[in-house]
Image 1 (cartoon, rainbow, N blue to C red):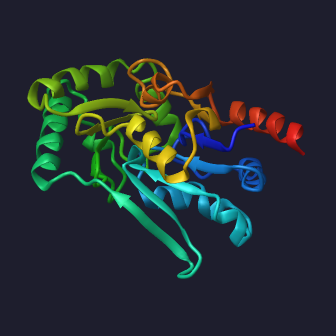
Image 2 (tube, rainbow, N blue to C red):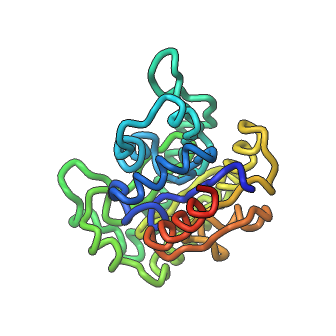
Amino acid sequence: MKKVLAFDIDQTLNIAKTPIDDEMAELLLECLNHFEVCPISGQKFDQFLVQIVNRLKNPTSEQISHLHLFVAQGTQYYRFDKINNDWKKIYDFPLTDEQVAKISSALESSARELGLWEEDKLQPGDKIIENRLSQVTFSALGQKADTEAKYAWDPTLEKRRKIIEKAKLLAPEFDYEIGGTTSINAFTPGMNKKFGMTHLLKELNVKKEDVLFFGDMTSPGGNDYPIVEMGIDTITVRNHEDTAYALRGILSIIS
């Protein structure tokens, strides 16, 4: 029996950049009665709250104590503090201001050179490059873009591969990974989901064999692939419906 269920977010628990639906919220709430539940994603902390935590209907303090938020590929970790009734940051490994500036410049220059800097398509107040403290994320259409537009922008991943190829020439000391529908995550070498999962094992005092991971970007070059390389048991899904189907099966066995 597994002790931990770990999940990518976009395209695994939800439609990209949207809150999880009612069924997924109910399934995750039930999972919290049996497992440690650990979303691990390139997204920032606020998005974890909007897309997952705030969608859970009336979780008990016991249930929420089993929810662990591994933010920015797991380079930041939050868990709920019952005493203060709020989320507490357990650790953080931020980039320096100089590193953020160099990554941001490399990504913007590369996208502009390729004609892929879509600033004119941004919603008011949105931005393409975002400092997520321990990583920098390029989102070609911003965070607020229409979901259909995001799916249509780079379905073959070719646009992002070209941006990464050029960015590596400008800032080769960083690693770059494709995530979500329009995103590229950039960070110091090793600060990917393998780093996050390694810390997850340590923080929860579990072994690799205790974890089951769900993700959609599990092929080489995808931001879930480092977890596969670790030898963590993984279920590759195409969308949140696949994840819901698998969770219903798991819960039916243990109920």
